[in-house]
Image (cartoon, rainbow, N blue to C red; front, side, top):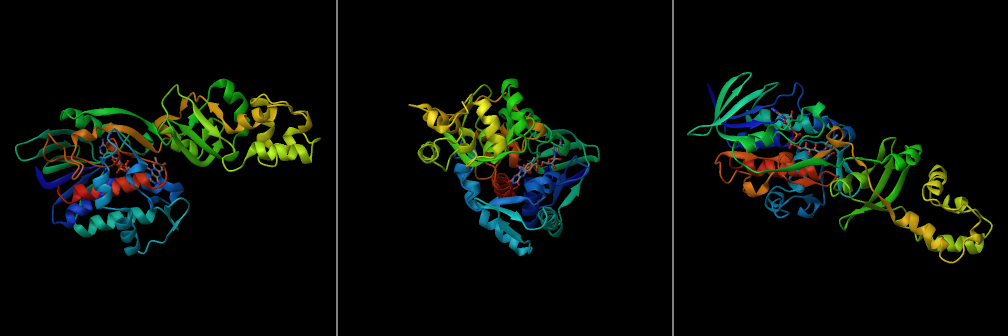
Length: 393
Ligand code: FAD
């Protein structure tokens, strides 16, 4: 049986980063992954350019049963630490928007950097390997795998969440947690497009490809970014963001005029151009295709502006500014960027990511109940949680 100080299961962002840190401390580290091709998510991320961190990453940008849990790791290994590493490797990057940092060229550079950090420090990486059994021993853990048996002092679970099964996602980490008696919180898809009920879809599907500036609000949390109509439902950054806060059966409130006083503008147009049709007036703010569909969908009367009496223009503005939508559901793990829930942070030390009750067992990255917003926050959690574990395993 081959022995290691540390075995990391999962060669994704968190696993590779943690492995490199531990090996740089002189630990003998083995990383196992069941995927044929590793780093699939990194390569696919940020549309192939990897939004590898966010300049404004802070605990407020994370959802978790314990919102304080992420503070320690995020403050000990910050976005600026990772940015410095990226700069050391001469990887060119830029801020796209809202502090989101992307590679100028390709996400391949980030994967190459992680593999190089592992390689320099002597990490052994094996894949595809199926981990069939994990057991606690007197000195640590033993593993039975498709490539033989291994033992180690520290076992790090970095197997991620359930999003995008075709990239190798599996419930492995949750099963290991349960095997060792750790609580696992219910999981659900996050950062995921909404699907619509038939009555909404039959009208709105026509808008596939239309994108609007909007705010999306749920549970007193609101995001101001774009929304995108698709042939299945609604997507775009504001929708992905709010999907992590939404629970089945709930409403989402959209303001489709977040930067413009729509009522004031319509009233002004009414005075200046009283004979203009509502659709013409609205086409000043929205794509024509959207206006035509919206007039039907919101059941508005497309008459000349002068014929809108009393509160009728208020009602028009309200339809756009307080559009209450009850999504049918989400597209689920097939397209979700992240998995909410997972290994309960109450079971783990926030300083090291070690299990409080099973010494030597660590969970890092997305497998645990810490989920970031869209915009580089999830990779930053992978780096920060991987780094703190890497200092002690
Ligand atoms: P992963 O990166 O998912 O790695 C888990 C690894 O474990 C995988 O290699 C998997 O093969 C392996 N594994 C799973 N089960 C087993 C098993 N049974 N045995 C052995 N190995 C196993 N976040 C950002 O911050 N910025 C972005 O630009 C961004 N873009 C994204 C785009 C897409 C399409 C998706 C799906 C996600 C994106 N994310 C982004 C989220 C981010 O990729 C994840 O939060 C992050 O990769 C989590 O890192 P991790 O190491 O915990 O898990």
